[in-house]
Each structure stands twice: as C-alpha cells, then as structure tokens.
Image 1 (tube, rainbow, N blue to C red):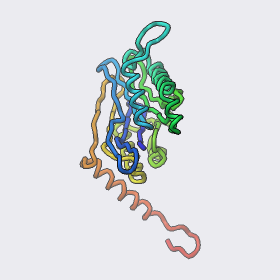
Image 2: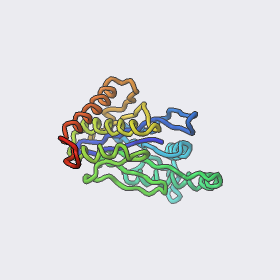
Image 3: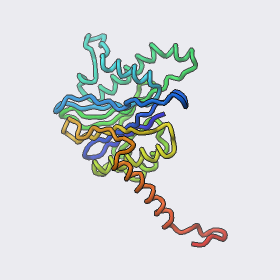
Length: 249
C-alpha cells in the first residue's frame, strides 16, 4: 500500500508521499513515489503514484520518453505540455497506453490494473493546479472548497485534513497538517512507512522551495508524532464523560 496527499492552498502546493512497497510480508522495499519535473523559473510539476509498482513505473517511463501525437508528430511529454490541464491529459493517455499493452496479461493472471496519480504544479503565467488521475485515465481537479486530494491508503489521514485544512491555511502549516495526516496513517497501517518525500511549491516561483526526504529518525517529525499523540490524549481527557448510565464527569 501507499499514502500520498496533495494540499493546494492560497500560497501554493504541498505534496507528500511515503516510500514503502510490498509484495508480501517478506518482500518489503523502499521506492520513490513522488517525482518532480522542473525547469526552474518556467515550470515545476510533481507526480505522486499509488498502486501496482510495475504499472506506475511503466506509466512514468512512457511520460518521460513521450508519446507521439499522430496528428502533429510531436513527442508529447510533461515538460513540453502547454498547460497543466493538457499535461494531466497526457498522464491519462499514458495510463491508457500502458493498460492496452499490459492489461490483457494482467487480467490473465487475475491481477487488477491498479494505479492512480496525484499531479500538481505550475507553468509560468498560469495558476497552480492539482489533479487526481484515475485508473481509467480520467481525472478531477482540486477546488478551493476541498483543497486537498489523496490516493492510496487515505482513510486514516482524511479526518485530520477534513478538520484542519482550508484554502486560507498558510503554506508551512499545510505541510505540518499533511505530516500529521501521514503520521495518523502510519499509526493505523503498516503498509505505509517512512521515509517520506515532501515537496513545497510557492505560487509563481516555478521552482521547488522545499524538496526533501524525511527519515523516520528526523528530529522534527519524531517530535511532531509525539506531540500530536500527547495533544490527542489531553483533548479526550479534557472532555466530560457522557452523562449516560452511571458514568461520572
């Protein structure tokens, strides 16, 4: 399993992804799932993946090598897409291309074509955007009403985002909330684990302000995990007991 989230706020974009993959309890590995495409000052984009590792790597290779446009002969990649929307379309086309090639063999082995992506970033002169691409290659865009998207094992980290994230949240607060969401997921699912790749993009910079890997022994992340647990315990202890039956406040 995996967990990736993207948070789009007024000042920019935060993207987070864990790195654990497994093909059984005795075959656990670390693979990067957050990939950055950058031409500093002109465009910066990031692609986070969840699902079958072989499929996601195939899609990434197709996007890197490019797909020939049958009408123009142009080799279309993320780096020459004229807009983020058209770049998202190219990701969908790459997903469908891999599905046509590998889908029949996977189906014969009773393996689902399981893949999804978060795609976000900015091209100079255009707004920051965030998309989620589905296994069929179609996609949705993030909105100011719900300024985050998730893929993978998302249910454990979603309540944190629902309660704390709004479009007006400051960029580094969004990063902090995203890390709490990641910690909540790791607490409840052994298939999600550090290291965590974190990317922070500020509006109109068109380059990554922060692109780091957070290890399990990172001092800030360890403190965040401890303080969040302590804050939750203090919160429930401060709430009166239910006034039902024989309980006492």
